[in-house]
Amino acid sequence: MSIENCGRTLTIDAEPQRVVSLWQSVTEELLALGLRDRIVAVQGNYAPYPESVAEQAQGLTSIGTSMGFPSKEVLLSQAPDFVAGQVLDGFAFDASQGYASVEELEQSGVTVYGANLCTSADAQTDAWSIDTAAKTLSDLGKIFNVSDKADEVIDRLNADKEAVVQAVAGEPTVKTAYFNGGTGPVIVLAGGVYDSLITTAGGENVFPSDAIYVSKEEFAASDPDAILVGTFEGQDFASQKQFLEENFPEMRAVKDGRISEVPTQETDSSISVMVGLTKIANALHPDLQLTVPTS
Image (cartoon, rainbow, N blue to C red; front, side):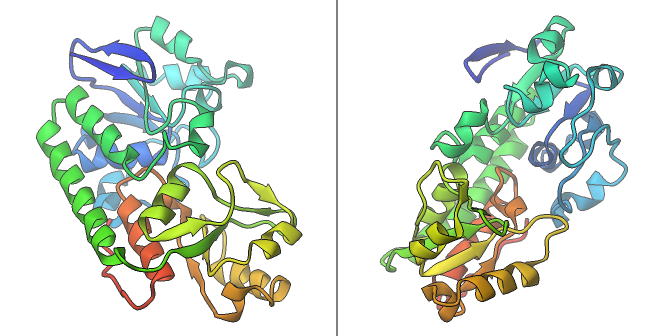
């Protein structure tokens, strides 16, 4: 079969049997499709696996770390026939860092699939959205001949999304900041999937799509109605909340106590994306008290 991926036509003669995943969200999608027996190695996880796939994830061979990718030699030692990465430019495929490039892998007979994103620039555009996970799941379903299972997972994600869309219809738009740490400048999450999630949940990101680092003065001036705190492994929500309260006491969201945790894992293009969406909707519209789906 052939499939279009990141401006390339991938022709696959047989279902891949030796898969290496170089990003956790991709690993989660493979596990959700029942492909545990095909995964020979993964980069490493950057957060606990969702409950629905945690048992399957036990015992996976890790050849990297949460943010460290395997060298070319280590990757090729796994004899993969299929490698999936979050983006195809740089990062896991950066030859200057000693990693195998996409071209080198393809020359070795490996199919390389860009899951969720194609280039790093996509991260802050609408090419990366709340629906990206469904596209990746659909592609993987075709590649591994498990489209029925992929459709089942996608249908569940779409149902969870629609529940939020229906619930927030008619609700006032909430000015929202998504804080991701830092003490000055501070880090904000904007553009791409973050804007897509906030908008779908009935909000509006107070920062432009290309914002990443903003000064404390800029952050204070944004004066959002609500602040989301994107925590990750090793980061404590209580301390992040305390930082906001101590440094921005005059901010409307801080005065009103509208600071809510939404782990970044749940806003990635993964099987947990609608968990993040529902938590955001609850943070922006507390009266809704939507039931958070299982991941």
